[in-house]
Each structure stands twice: as structure tokens, then as C-alpha cells.
Image 1: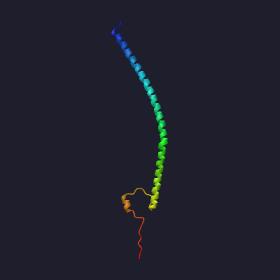
Image 2: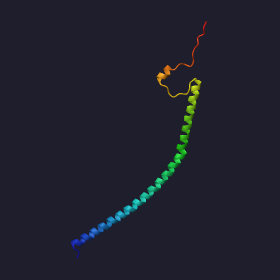
Image 3: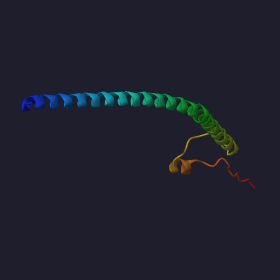
Image 4: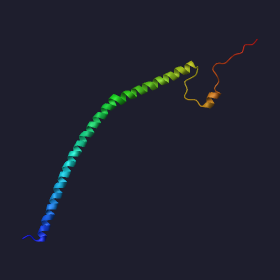
Length: 108
């Protein structure tokens, strides 16, 4: 006959066995999930490298070229205006600057 203490030990053993099986299955699923995540991150690295090479590097080169042309255009404008290429001037500097075109009065 089965006394209550024996039944308790069997129930605890069965519950512990189910808990161990559950934890093993959970660990297996976690391992598979982490493996898949590792594959995905490797693919993301490859894709991001391709995007960097095909999009960002040409964009960066075009940006540098346009900046260079902007500097050249500023220099050309400055030469046509008879000025040296300068950075942005403050309002006070602009007012104090003398005009390069002076009107000379002829003596009679």
C-alpha cells in the first residue's frame, strides 16, 4: 500500500523531473535562438558594409567635391570683386571697409 509520505516523494520527484525537462528544452531553444541571432548579425554586418561602400563613400566623395567647388567659386567671386578671399565678415567690418572703386575728381 502507498502511504502519504511515499506519494509525496513520488510527486516531488515527478515535479522535479518535469522541471528539469522544461529547463533543458528551454536551454536548447535559447541556444538555437542565439545561433540564429549570430547569423543575422553577421548578415547585417555584411549588408551594412555593402551599403557603406555603395552609398556612403560616393556620397562623401561628392560632398567633398562640392565643398571644393564652393571654395573655388568663392575665390573667383572674390577676384572679380577685387577682394581677397575672406571668411564671413561682421557688419562692422563691412561698414568700415573702403570701396575699391574710388572716384577721382579732375582738377580744372
